[in-house]
Image (cartoon, rainbow, N blue to C red; front, side, top):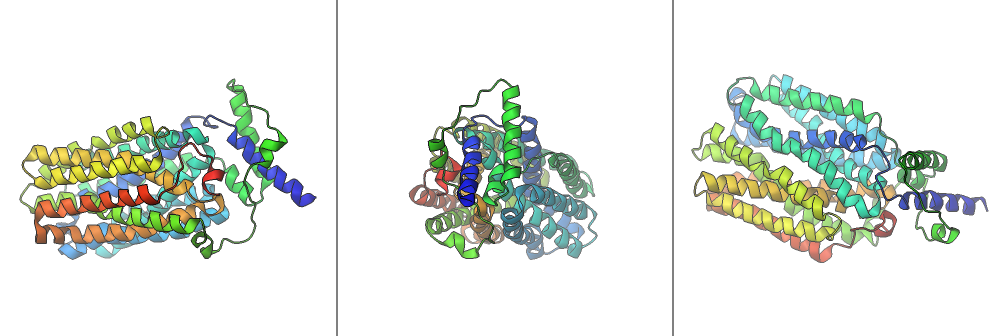
Length: 459
């Protein structure tokens, strides 16, 4: 009887969450989460603009520059997403959201203070640990609070505020990297300050009631949901009454046993693991190759560093435009179709950029690529996260997105070689085709998620 009462109480808490059709926290909390996103995208972008200045100062070879700029960060990203993602499923989203930003602050300040290659490698790795985990945790955290029919919408609002970091970084880099010998250090130091602000603000965030229920902490979950209900009632919102039949239909489990690695390789998650692993692996080939190598490849082709950064900076205006465009349709069109549309646009952008006919082609290609990245990536993050159950959500994300970064390492390391072997046009067109193939895989193998309750998607 006690077990049945506990099960009913767990279902009741989730049912109360599902009946809330508004964001249950003050809007400022979305901004707090977005600051973390802002730093993440700032850091993903800043290394590509810093490397052309770091390489001659540290007397780096081409292979050392590539390893430092991309590979070591990606290694940290994968490890951080796996380890901290697992810890998030075991110990909760809140403490890990604090840890990730603390790691990124430490890494960024260390980057800025590095005196040699070894120091820079260590701190880029630390930054990567936090960055990879944070990109994992944010969509899980938002998804576990947001109502089903607004989950994509709210995720894209946060993503839009965050992606401004990727749009702003090229202009910051243009202002301080070429003119100042220490400009690249300032670029990293600014990132560290942003991360410190995020750590302080995140201390206000509540714990996820869905995570608390999944771990049997029902009293704490009830307190959090009661706070949501009180907040909404104070704002004049009326919450519908729940019947026992509605509550009993809820699919929820409470688990106190440790999550097994093999859990996600059982049905129905096995196919999802494969589909998302292929999607992220193929997507990151082009994504990291373009973000990490484009400025250097342009500079090596005879275009000045300042002009290379300027072309990419103007193109980066596409980031907020793409995020806003996706926000409009985020809960109206199925997730996988939005991502597929973005993959087509990415291919078009790479073909135009690769043509290198003139500065207009480079700026236009960069703009379309930036637009498509922001159009699809926030939706893809949420789509991946919501496809797994609460007790394994960030572990599942880490498996797909984390392993997918192997593709990012491949793209970043090999794009200069592909450009050397098959030409500028061939190299950039190739990294457009890989994303187009990834989009096809997701359309064919992906499940339905838009406007669905989390407990239904992950069943």
